Image 1 (cartoon, rainbow, N blue to C red):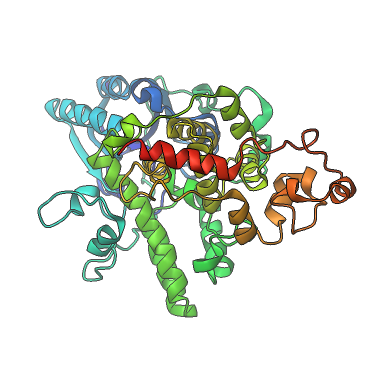
Image 2 (image 1 turned 90 degrees about the horizontal axis):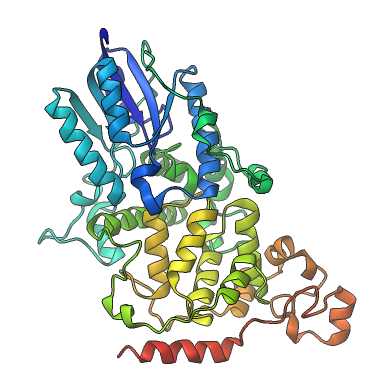
Length: 476
């Protein structure tokens, strides 16, 4: 054993050196620091990261390793065993980490903390992922909120206690190494097949790129955000979700940077709406914290009796973006090619899956988990329950998004569809969201052959809507 006292900084979903409370505390300990990352698929089980997230994680860890002068140490396996072995081989006196909120991590971390403290090791945990942690935002009777607006008002609009200011950028004065660490490549995060190349062309993971994106959005994108955020054909969303999930940015940095932009440019309404979206992220974490079965169980138990259909063929067509509904297909293809989907379109494709196709929301949750670079257990689970009508503060089941009218309203020129469904690119705007309505000569001129190079609609919107409403009525 190395007799020199050491501290471990355990990076998790906080892959940054600025505004990192645990890293600040580790640096303040004045001990040599061993910075580590542990890929713990053992305890994650069915919630181990999907393929797109693993690609992002690899790039982000590489960036963080550069920030730490190449001193970041990588491990793979059960985090309980990894930390125990490190403490056996090193004179570890202190361990620092930022808390996570997924149920499997909470259970594992509690066991780790108890074991370390029994061994006489000082454990310091911090909040580095949320503006306010779930236990801090409850109703007067200490029960959790199930409705977003009062949840948001209870904390984020109370400026007597606003979110804390971001902390300084921190790097240890000295590093130490750990035995048996691996190279980043040994974590085997990169996919075997080259499908990720189009995703790589769309993103640059890492803390520096995250700040560049935040600055660019606040400079050029937030003006008009309140209305523009619903337009997938415009560059009016922040695209910060994967950066927040992996902790390349903290929500505190984003919250306060947006506030500073508001005070300078008189963008109060747009900034308030953007901050509200941060509040929705926190609401999802609160739901997951208080209802740990959120990823698998309906919050409204009456939906346990819902008569879902089973059709692997229809599910595959939805996944592949060949439903015959251009707005749905554009969203699913954007997801496959970029690892991302515009939020308005997520609602459209989600409603189409669970209501028009009447397929279980679990199928959508699983597909998004594997294909989104911003796949987040809290957000993904809460959002799918919201669109399915079975969650907290959910959209009523009878709110069924019409893929055609949604396309015409939010992609009025058809630019979004033309980008991701190029076989329809030459259709005139008045038919691009419903090509089956186009006259034969218009289809021929545009080079569109329904049922040949673009599919006919998989279902009839009116009939499938009536079917969905009848299924919902059966619950009463």
